[in-house]
Image 1 (cartoon, one colour):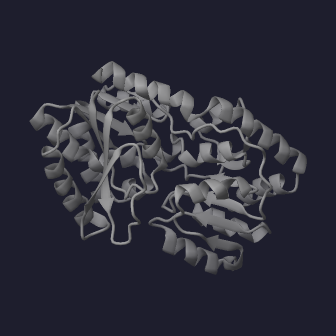
Image 2 (cartoon, helix red, strand yellow; image 1 turned 30 degrees about the vertical axis):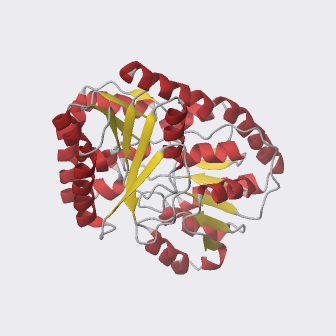
Image 3 (cartoon, one colour; image 1 turned 180 degrees about the vertical axis):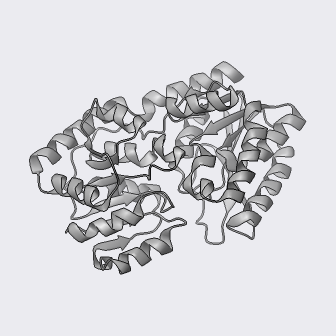
Length: 361
């Protein structure tokens, strides 16, 4: 079977998405290596059915991190035996492209999002110009690839005339009884710009149930400052990054989950977030933005409340409608169970394995 290399910029331990992809392909017989980065405070790697490699760089963020990490990654990849290489999002695409070109190996692009249209990129003209130039120079040469929904696939086809497969990121399906709810509501995932903390945190003025935030990111300092500014710091608990196993134990205990994105970034509008399916599989009703990919699923299963805007008032109203309406909450929990039986990695991984079988044998 094929020798496959996948490249990311995280430290691997918290990447449930890549763990699912690499595990499924390793179990299908491929020899899989996942390459990420080693941080100063990285925890030891957990055993997996595929090989894991972490590259160390002294810098952990900003231009110098990306520049040095990509150079290190390029020279590492140039010395490995491989049949194909897969760049996970745009931040590792350049070394993958150069390696595949020089060594005449097959190249694949895993476009989890419209990278250049994320708020933290699109709101900074110089940064946007640099990443957009990389995208225009490389993506047209990645004829093989996949995205998390057909809206993103269509945008790539419009921009670069590439025809990408849709492989959504969903948890493994495990039938479960409804957990006894804890006394908290939950945001899990990256604490980054564009995730609506500017309105979610002020909404806590009108919500009595504590909010737990399980994650970390570039907006953490501002999130803590907002909690203090609005006098709700006693209602908000910042849990930090949790190991995947610990997070899977925590999520089902939440009363409500959040999938929120600001509408002014195209990547947000066409997103299909990992946490959306995590809440679904945990049986947790969620307050979710009314964007196309989410609306498609909500029209089939009432797994929470879609909100037409992300104002603090709208968020608080939706949360309280769930918290104070036990019958509706139970109905949403049952809808989550039915939806999870349809939207799961057992089904989606078959598409993934067919993709690699078709193109690599």
